[in-house]
Image 1 (cartoon, one colour):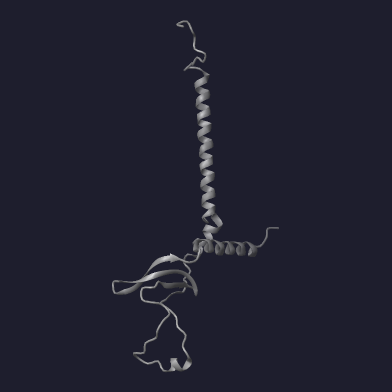
Image 2 (cartoon, helix red, strand yellow):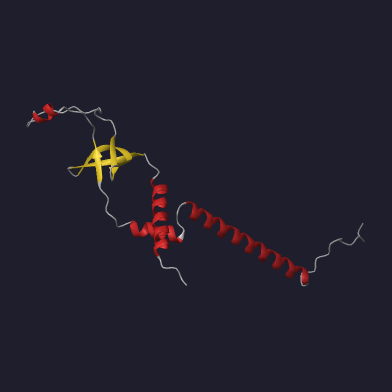
Length: 154
């Protein structure tokens, strides 16, 4: 048994070490490429590709009309004409019910009324619309409109 020679002798100074290092380096490069591709796919899924991301960035400074609705009611014309200081108008929501947050007359969220530094404010408790998806769609429309209005190269 002492005379047995190893079946896979290792020559630490030979080409085997170089081959192993080369294989390890190529494996690291392949993994790095896969990670880069996965990151690119993830970025595209959340709307961070260059054209759409740039369009959203451009639209970031656009002012939108935001309103908070405590509740609604229907009134007859004669009841509206009878309104005076001190009149009470009953709404369709109870105290403590969430208020509706509208952006450009579109319901986007609900929240609760708070007072902060003597000012009313809203703590958002629910997002109603898929805002990120809609913003990406709007940005894509802007990009496609820009591309359709560009003069074609002849």
